[in-house]
Length: 171
Length: 102
Image (cartoon, rainbow over all chains, first blue to last red):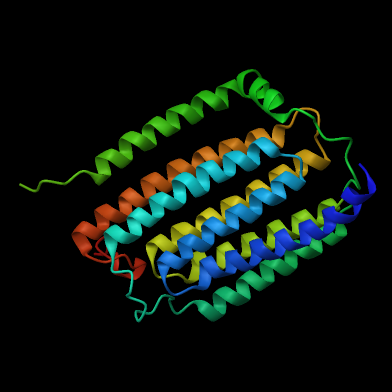
């Protein structure tokens, strides 16, 4: 690690973290659901930048492919299929805003206090140079049962969503 | 190198924001978006631990791949459920889905 990397990494982390938090708040609080989906995509871009800072390059690319390329597009399809995009006059939140906000604030305070109390390892050993190779080997050796279960889960989700999306004929 | 606690703090903040969305959104698609935010925060925590604690086997990144798999399946099934409900109820708001009440 040279000096420029040492100086620039925390700044990059701060900017990416700020972007991720701002876009997450936008995805939660914006009135137009279409804007929420776009903000979600931006949040996942920022989050994959954080993954790059954590030397998880493969996961960063997969995150953009799966979330931005598949899930957000699926959500936009669902949004345009279900309601008029311009229906921003309808109330978007329920009556739980203030209790929910207080509960989330309490949870955040608890998490931060636990985090401050624990002694984390300062810096791990050096990063792995080739994460794809290790992840692939782990997936097919140590975690092969979970891998098979995940493939069955994806097949079940595929069949289930096709069945649910089919036109139901009432007799 | 940014310390581990900052990554964990970022994950906690994003998770709490997603939880707030799950609790307060009326729109069912908005609730799904918030669930995806929470899963993203969990995945960030797993990757951070895999960088700082367990670097040789990269177990955290493998778990994160599984989290993404489950998130993809959950989004597909959830959106299909919302579309099927929209066909019968003509609404996407979670408080309109009261057909299971007796």
